[in-house]
Image 1 (cartoon, rainbow, N blue to C red):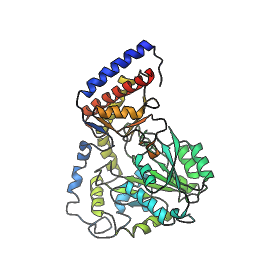
Image 2: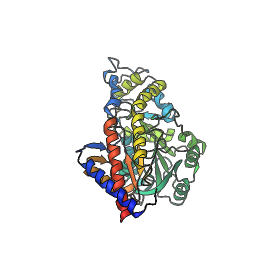
Image 3: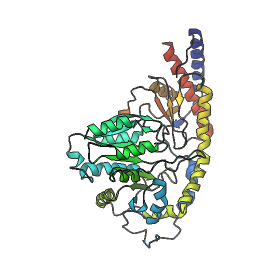
Length: 422
């Protein structure tokens, strides 16, 4: 990212950056780019969901959705999302509103009960560790911290995690029980796992017989271009490699319909499905099937999901294009930054010079632009390079977003040139 500058040129650029920052601070901004929340306009696309099911209270198989039961969720909703999540409907659970809750529960159940293929409960073992591709999703890391699971960072590449590192770690260490994966339009860098990466994950030798891939396919339908990315079917690949129980697949409608009132999904092998359903039966008498029926009536089928996501894309794509346009105009020739151009998902990753991310985020906050804390993309909140900043363009209006990204660019120039001048 570096560009050679003479002392006089650097002094001039730094003076200008300081003036621009003073102007920015004087605007009295209050802008928030911290989380990848859907904008109100995106939520409005699902407004009709609130008026459903319109007096109807039976599912396709005659189940009264107002009553207890149906722990696996409505069959017709599972049919709609089976293709989206690459899980046969019979091996899919439709649950409550949060896939994060399902990930939490899978960890708890693995700690307190024996997963298929395990010799003992995880809690009875001296050490449990997970591989964490970085940059990655802070809530995955928070779950590991919550339960005392050690985190081992592995670098991300354009094709997914560095598989040489992954294969070496899982082969030599039986305490490595899992890996976090956001395989499509990954959070936060937008990377998509290649077919070769999926095949290697499915077939690699693991020292732990109960190793699990936590496959958080959160952005399975969240395309931003006319060329949607398709990834290989992990569940089928695991079965074909003789490791049918290896994959836990998660997804939800949280960024498809109503973020706070969606439906979450879990998919896996028949053995894993029975393991989770058996454990869940002790904590629930069934999910919110009324809400599941709402989603069936609103989305109708897989084509309905695709059409709905095209309307989502129409609102999101201009925001991602604005981020790329402004960063290129303000930082493209400076040598101070690099950023991703994702084909889908909810985030852009901005890389600044090593040692600068925390200071950029601090300066931006002082100017009224709040960003996700630097380091959140890494385990324990510590980015060893202090270089990665996650941008969440979805929630602000377009004009506010443009103002925020332009202001962020000012902060990058200020901090970057200050570092060079030392």
